[in-house]
Image 1 (tube, rainbow, N blue to C red):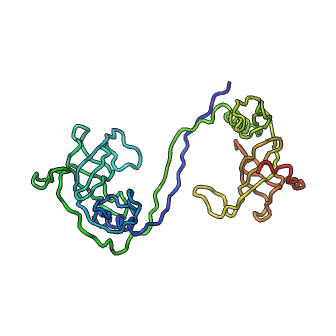
Image 2 (image 1 turned 90 degrees about the vertical axis):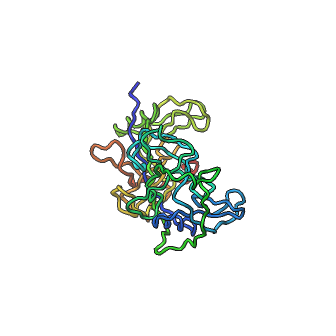
Image 3 (image 1 turned 120 degrees about the vertical axis):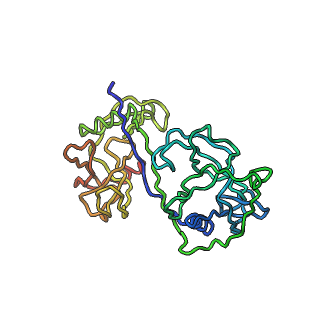
Length: 323
């Protein structure tokens, strides 16, 4: 049996979102070293602020300012910080109820070790040196020994939130957050065989012993019948465009000029369409039923793209079940 393949894989993209009036005020306030929450109709103060009451679902716009000090309600020690986490030395993830708030804010707590952290400990915000209007404007929390007479009977503080207009100069109206997932991908037995065949410029699928459909790429089991597939079947190399889309936005780190066409292609002999880029033809001439074949580049383990073969278009009835 050939060795099962595995490789590191990174899925990464920038997530862009606009901000409503509440989140805009909250993030702009952090830039100005002000922590804002919202007050509900029954008098609760929520930090971080939300736009709708999680209990009643009513809209909330009553902004209040709370203190940059608070109390740890629960915590967990992070002994091995990962890339892009708030601190590069071991720290605690802590839920901190800021003075004047009724809910807790999750953030990093800088402490020398887990023995130095406990529920009920007093902490304060450590502001970032450069602030841009993001949650990272709070660099972390740090231990804070305030005077006992400042404490309330329950949560460590009697501070009351102060009404705030939420108006600042140059408010933050949108954010871009980098989303990234790192993991090791293993294609398994069936797809390992498929990838190894591609290195030989062959397309190999697997046939279901029950419904007799051929799946490319193979999945190791029939998605319809749920039974294992072991019989290998070579398909293609040519196929038929079943559906397609025109891409007008250039992807980062992808050296392909827009617009271009990405299509589902039913290879001859396959009962499942795979997707690939279409080249060698103007994007506005690509159509359903177009017959295409693979284009390989030197040393490539998979086709660079598919281009028209010059054959007549396939009849719709021959691929309508593969749309």
